[in-house]
Length: 280
Image (tube, rainbow, N blue to C red):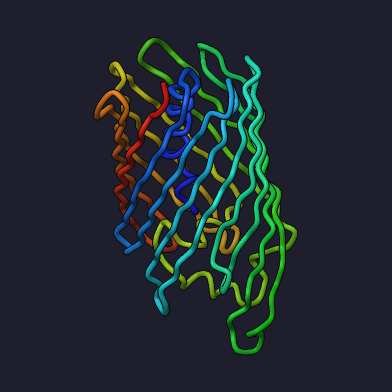
């Protein structure tokens, strides 16, 4: 699901990681996102402290998009283990994404990172194994398989007590040239939403942003660009976010996003997330 591939979510993961690193117990969250192309996403997730410096993360999401011909629903499920050795850490995970009747993938992810009071640096890897059920009349009933390897890097640097900056990117290499495969037009009409399947088949992405902290409250501005592997089109994305405590154990986050696609036009999106910090 594209929610987890764009700049807003990258910021959020880093912010919550800083807060959770010094906490004991667990973090639970739920959220919803909607965009002007009638895309809707609903998510629940949790981080659970298994022992000191070891966390288990679970994520489940459902995405509904309104296509030109037919509506579509895709699912996301992820399980990850994060171990912090101070000053370095390792995160590994497995996941499922997609719709088994159209396109889905089984994913493996790994990230090696280092973190201190001045910021963080992570090297990321992702392997995706896809199955695509062909839909056009001559090929209907056949399944095409392909895979992708993704490599990336992300870094966050603190410029003072209140300001930090972020930069990150990911590049994917596919086992097939998706731009010349038959039946790829099936994906192009599934939806024009920013949450559509086409935005999960990326050639590359790049994100940059800045964050300003006021106590436990955080404001951020991010900009990014990604290119789809299907048609080579690019999308420029911009967002502003606000994260604030609602109580001693609850945080809420609002985010407004704007995407400018050279093929599908412009969309805006609004998201809301709720986080509960449990334990002692």
